[in-house]
Image 1 (tube, rainbow, N blue to C red):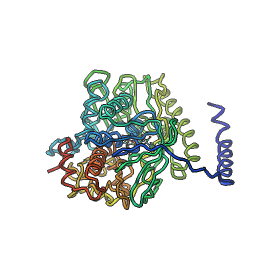
Image 2 (image 1 turned 90 degrees about the horizontal axis):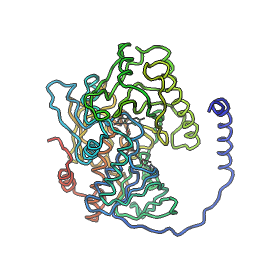
Image 3 (image 1 turned 180 degrees about the vertical axis):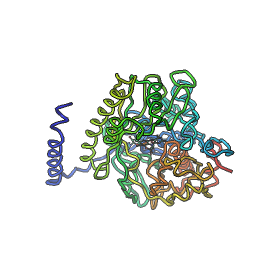
Image 4 (image 1 turned 45 degrees about the vertical axis):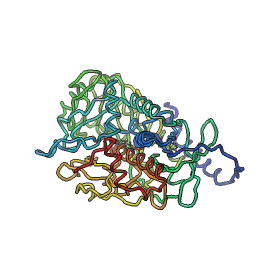
Length: 479
Ligand SMILES: Cc1cc2nc3c(=O)[nH]c(=O)nc-3n(C[C@H](O)[C@H](O)[C@H](O)COP(=O)(O)OP(=O)(O)OC[C@H]3O[C@@H](n4cnc5c(N)ncnc54)[C@H](O)[C@@H]3O)c2cc1C
């Protein structure tokens, strides 16, 4: 590890340069090949935060549904990137007199209910400090989340293809006819009437020729889970420096009223800690569902180019792993009770807050978000902003996500859900959060199934039919 640390950057850069040159030197023309065809009503690409919910929604509407996921489990960034699921509620605590209401229900809440039964979540723990950011902290056991969603997908009869990479789209004019996949079972074509792209990077949309942008305006991150640590001791450490900015108590290791979320003001912490933390892009926020464990210490690294560049990603992956080790060293050195901390888990690959942004029929603006606008084709309500308290939804209320924001421009039968919608960076700071992605997933999967049943394109679906079905399946709408 140490040797790699010293010698690797120059050698790596040289190798990468060579491999790029090699790629440009010559080309190999693939021979044409007949692919086996599998036929479905709905194909959902990506079994992440949004995709799991989309596939469940489609299958429960009776659509023969396939779900294509490159990793070996469902869950995506909700199990790899962040700290808690933001947010099932409006920001009532920051607005005295405003009514507390759960604004995302339906399948996302069902997942939480299943997790509650097996000790896999803090539940919706109320924040006692920092509630002008979020009123609740809903933390999850990331491994149990993967299991629970896997089981729910199997129960719903979804044809689950894990370890399967989506590699292309087969077009018939402006309709997608099929998705091409690659796995150890070979290359296959998945035909369907409706498609939902939940790949986060919009891979299916890009293959289908949809318009997109790649702003590359966020660092990439590999979050770590840290073992052999104590929330109580970390709390003491922050408190001793008058640095606690967020605090929530909830269910942890089977006991109620335990500390489950903490964040601290970095500038108040000892310079040796804060200076080093800044250098490695480390944040102080953490949540947990278990004793002796911190979830998701984030390490940020800003790549010079878009994270769709494989060779630059390789360099970033290495850099992030170096930062993870440094983060552990900081905890061991500075935080009493964390002297034996170790990296208990990492994400299988780096995460990004936005990669490709797919052009849809409507692009949600920041004014829509903070003014709390609702639309005549709302598919859900949402009330969280990642930049709170600087930006909050007016009066602790909600805004609506319109169905049009999920319809990929110029493609007839493709919907998207998740972090790939919304080009305005500040609006995206709201729409990209996990609970929003899950809600979008429920709407997109439901709409795809209805389009299949009615044999129509995404834009020909009657909104009243979609709304009625969403309401019947537990989706909350503001009245
Ligand atoms: C570091 C970080 C911290 C965050 N913190 C928080 C937080 O604290 N709270 C919060 O609410 N939100 C947080 N977010 C935002 C939120 O986690 C994400 O925006 C959201 O989870 C994205 O969901 P998604 O469904 O769009 O994508 P994902 O959940 O990433 O799902 C995409 C899925 O598609 C699969 N896939 C991709 N391409 C292919 C392909 N070609 N073939 C097959 N499968 C493919 C992926 O493997 C993945 O499973 C954070 C994000 C990051 C990156």
